Length: 342
Image (cartoon, rainbow, N blue to C red; front, side, top):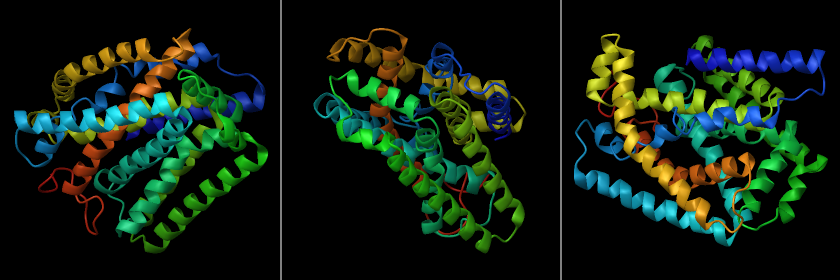
C-alpha cells in the first residue's frame, strides 16, 4: 500500500504547488497518456490476465482445463455482449463503463482495507458496500467535478469512435450537473466516514481509511483526469490486486515469505503474459472494426479504454467470486486466501 500512497501523494502535492504558483498551467495530453500506455504491459492490463487461474487458486487447488475453460466462456459471453453494446448504443456503453468501473474499483478498496490493512470498522456487508460506493466515486466522479472539460474530451473520444455523440449526457458537465455529482460524492464519503467512526474499535484503522480518502480526493481534484486515472489504475488499483493474487499462488507466496519479491513477480508475469498478449490481439481486431478508424494517440488510448471496459465486466465476475471465497461481503474477518488467513 505504501508505494501507492507515496506516488499519488507526491503527484498531488505537485498539482497543488502548480495550482498555487503557476495557475492555468497543465500537463500536455501527450504526457498524460504515458501511465495508461505503460499499463498495457505493466500491472494495468496484466492484473486481470490471470483470471483463468484465480477461482481455482482461491480454493487452494491448481486450475484444470475445465476451470480455465469456464472463465474463458465467461469472458467470451459477458465481454462479447458488452463490446457489442459499444457498436449499437455507444452512449449507454459509456455510462455502463463509468458505473461498472465505479463499482469494481470500490470493490477492490474494501478488500485492501479489511484483509490487508486490517481496519476494524467495516463490520457489516452494508457498511462495506457503502465504503465501496464511496471509494469508487473518487476516480470516477471527482474528476468530472474538478475537470469537466477534460472529462468531456474523454467521453467524446470514446463515444466518437463508434459514431455517437454525448446527447443527454452533456447535462453532467453543466454547473448544475456537477453540483449534483459533488453532493453525491460528498454524501457518500461523509456517510462512510461517519459510520466508520461510530463503529471503530481503534481510531488507527479509521484514520487510515480517512487518510486514504483525503489523499484520493486531493489527487483527483488536482491532477488532470487522464494522468490521474492512469496512475491510479496502474499504481494503486492494479498493484493492490496483483498483491492479492500473489498470496493465492503457493509458490509466489513462499517466495514472498522468503523475501524473494522478484521471484514472486516473475511468476505472476509468466502467468499473465499469454492472456495479456491475447488482449492486445483483441485490441488490434477492435481497431479494424470501429466505425471511425483511430486517428492519433487520443483515439488509440480511447480504443484501449474500450477494450478495458469490455474486459472489466467478466473480470468483475471473477473478482466477485474471489470476494465470496475470501468472505469480503459477509460479517467477520476477511481472508487473504480462500481457506484461512495466512
